[in-house]
Length: 333
Figure 1 (spheres, helix red, strand yellow):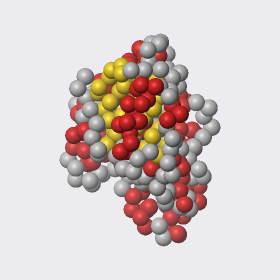
Figure 2 (cartoon, rainbow, N blue to C red):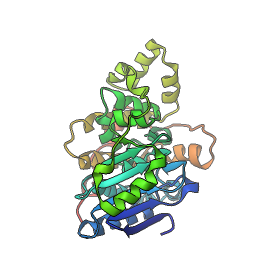
Figure 3 (cartoon, rainbow, N blue to C red):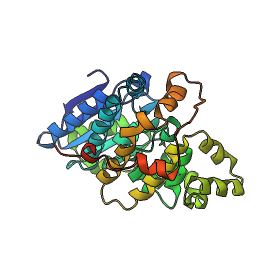
Figure 4 (cartoon, rainbow, N blue to C red):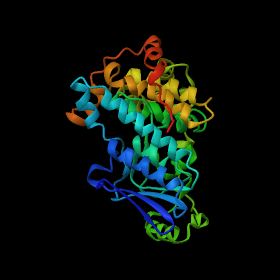
């Protein structure tokens, strides 16, 4: 397919995002094709490792292509979104549990759906331009694609900070937060990929000292609060206007549910548990949450002025994160 180049090259399976003008946004068809390639290569002895990279300088993948989900939802079709998230999350789990090495080269913007692809690889390479974020609360979603699993494993309460503010991590912070493993200047990537294709020798992935990690030096004690209101109160006391400004832009329901997802993910033993919990929210998001309004404001009309209306009470969070019964996310063949 034009948006995703899938091929075997030497000893590697190669997957390259190839829609740079759209910041390599991940569509439903791309997610399914990526997953299918991984399934086929699992038993293919010619494929010793998988390399995932992207064309263009601006983005590895800036998120999921959600315009189709929005359009279906405003026409009363909520199944479109449910199927997209269902297939995407199963693909995320495939990457996280893949029996062969998966090497991701993540330049530029890596957000949402991009984190779900590159952030679960066994060998995650970042460069100078890398900017990683989970900005879902700004469009009425929650940190999904296994994002709650990754955020939960960031040191201290940094995960809550990243979820609530959608702040962007440079390469140093991405490594400190557990979203990446190795810093290698991007100019070296083409030759490195060619060596991997020829040798499948992962020992050549020798990292260099990453740039500074200013976020990781921050004080995230305010984010230990029991709920969003407590965190906002602590930030107001501390006079952290930058964080407060970011938080006030987001959907209250998304932040309340996201906070719970991150904290519950700390007790998970595998990413599938976190993905299944995230899916409960996204399965209902177009019908019950702020998703449609968030996408309208940020992506469709681009007025950047969402009118959040969803109830964000504890009862509402319980409701949108309640079990889906027979529609729960599963990982069966």
